[in-house]
Length: 95
Image (tube, rainbow, N blue to C red; front, side, top):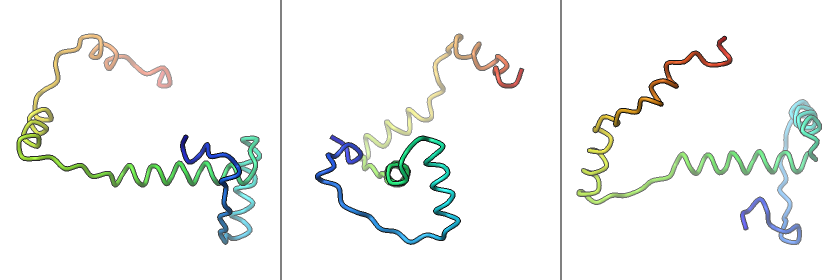
């Protein structure tokens, strides 16, 4: 079970102060998505929190693993004719 799917019995309030124009914008966006303001703000905050933490993820490698990692990055990709064909086409949105 993820944080976003915890039962309501585990929910705790989170209070923030924002300007009225910010609140109005959030209310309009929530209404446009047919969500409550609480659901909209919670979903947006969780998405941003996840992205912030993923951007800061650090992994440690020993010298041998680091060398293999760099070698993999330096190795040219294998030929892929289907990918080359796809990348040579004009995108649908550009037609």
